[in-house]
Image (cartoon, rainbow, N blue to C red; front, side, top):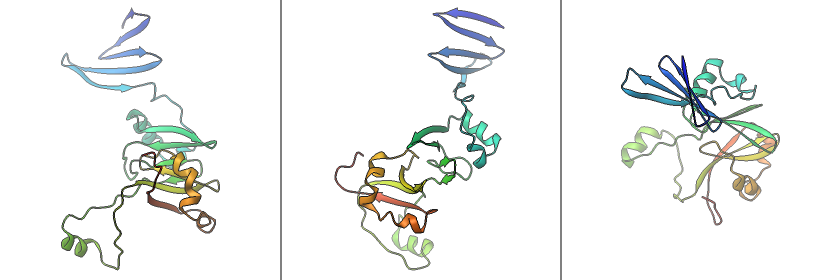
Amino acid sequence: KRSHKINQKVFQRKDSCIILERKGRAVQEEKTHGKGIKRRRNTSKINTPYPDFLEKHLAEKDITTLKERESLHTSQFNNITFVRLSQEYKCYPRGTVFYDKGIIPGYPKIMRILHLANGINRYFKNKFYVEEKVDGYNVRVAAINETPIAFTRGGFVCPFTTDRIQDIIDINFFNEYPEYIICCEVVGPGSPY
């Protein structure tokens, strides 16, 4: 083991790894036998503590894997802690949100039909409705602690939509169906997106 002090930063050499301290973040660089850097990852986030409720939803091995991939991101809104998944993992789509009382699955994928006649015959067996496509943005609205909160496709809380939920949907829906999640496209003036 050798260590060098350069510009008040400590570089430690351990076998084929170099650990760099940069502005409070530890970055690990793994080298392949003299052929340059194989990969870089932020090791400080690997040791970042996540809320205990995450273990109710994911196995410890999965949490470790997701930490290494830097796919778990913690945030708070209205004193509620959320952990969002920034990359698809196993059965969890990107944008899945974990919180102490449950999971809000990522926004469902909607398949595109390129050839109308073939697509209708292949994917639609029952009656269906056709709507005009309008440009907007997708959100999922869920009642958390009896308060409707909107989440973007990426799993971020959307304060703009959350503030306007009462103008968009009848929130009494969640009184009757508190465990449901509404997936919708929001359109209209004043959109921040």
